[in-house]
Image (cartoon, rainbow, N blue to C red; front, side):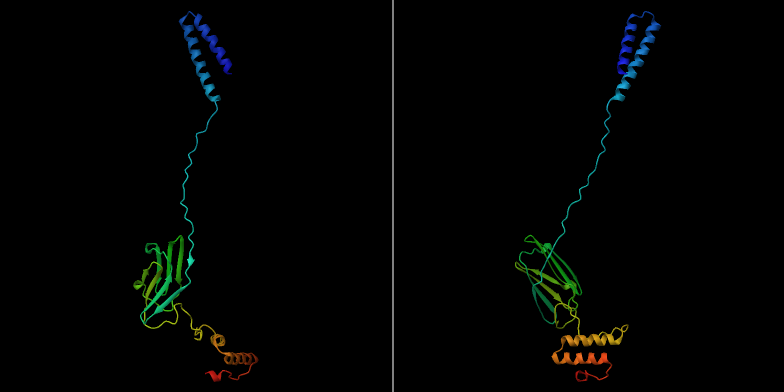
Length: 219
């Protein structure tokens, strides 16, 4: 098709060069113009089309590795009637990189970037309540000292809360016998050999329907 346009144009130009009358020259010139226009349009439509690239926006999300902590399970503690003092052995702690979470009955400390590692120390439930806003932490070169103020004066049996196993369960919604059986179980676990034999006999008698009071010597 492009060759046809070229041949037609060449012939029209030849005719234009030999034409004499103005009207004929004008008609030939108009036709030449139309053919040139069609030739250009044909050439542009046959050229390969390159699609406009669609810009892609990539958002980089900063990568934050999950922090891992080594637990400080070894510690010592002391107390007086008003305060508790906890000693943690850890070298290189920076106070500005320490995180603490203290409530009336729990404490948690996190020590970040200590010689390339993270450490934590926590007591989920203290033996008794403390006064959180009076807690003090002293950072030494090789250890940390935590000062806790007791909410009520008195000696603690332990730093961690421990349920009194010999205290019967007085939940009114439960069968009273369940509380008694729990008490006997705890007495069996805590008692000496003679106590265990007596409780074992009481359980046997109860299952066999006997009414003998095998625990009367321990009341």
